[in-house]
Image (cartoon, rainbow, N blue to C red; front, side):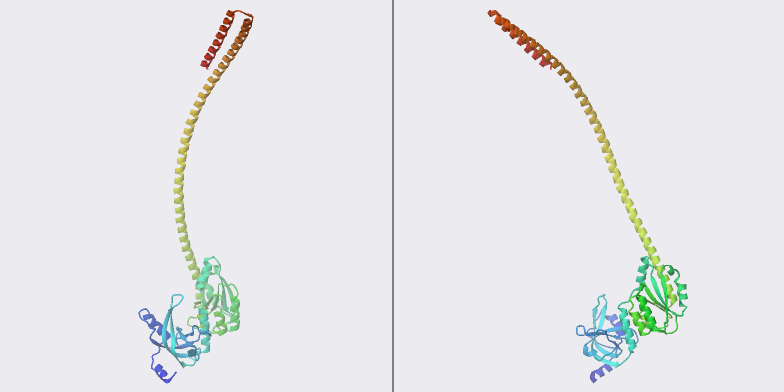
Length: 417
């Protein structure tokens, strides 16, 4: 940077990232700042990426006095001389874009950069910040995880990590109340002053199936809770981590890595007890809603069944009426058929009797005809022996009379039939 640029920067008013964020929130919706040059002062925090994205690196600049941060977009040349913890002045234009979750992301596109102080924060702070960044990307919702287990009628197992010589468990037990019946609390004691032992215990517990790991300690004494070995272990835990380190005034970096923070062992007991009360209330409310829903469904089913039953009864009545009418019609048809049968039987009897009489008459006629044939045969013989014409005339007369008699008899009997 030449002297002219340094002079320009010396007379420029520098903002903090927190100030820029507040200012930008005020007029983001009504004006554009993309074309305005903005100068920032803050602590440079280098990203873990060793390769640029689209020709640029995306690092952070943090407020000197707060945890507020802002992204900065630098080229490889600008970034070359910068180190973690440098207090820097940068100038550039602000670009904004919409993140994947609908958030507006601000980023300063750096055009000028100047190192004000070589090491504004210690290397330890830089390492801790890297752990915090890693933890922030995988923070777990302890409340949701444990509540879901309780709703599923499971008994969450909580690992309580306690100092070797401590009476804080009395405060915890006095506060937890009814939580004992719904949680399983397992105690593990370790010397908090020995970071390697504490870290080893946390890693061991992380390999078991605990719903959460809670580190429980009363106030007083720094111990090794903020040792980097312990902090790195906590940042890498897969199991939800709860901090119950008293007192609230004590500032431990380990708290910023916890998924859930309560201010004391007593508050930890209250936390589990209140969760039980909250879940029970929610379940009771849900049961009441469910019962009301079921009752409405049952009433609707009963009403539908009654309507269906009424319809079936009407159909049964109609079928019964149709059946009675059918039975009545069938009875009438049977009576008429019976009468017709009786008439037919009477006619059949009469016809049988008539046929019998006719048969008798035919038999008599047959006998008479046979007798007439014999008479004719006798007359024929007499005729054969007679030579006179009178005899032939007489013979043919008798034959004619006999035939006439037979024809009359046949006509008579046909008329009888």
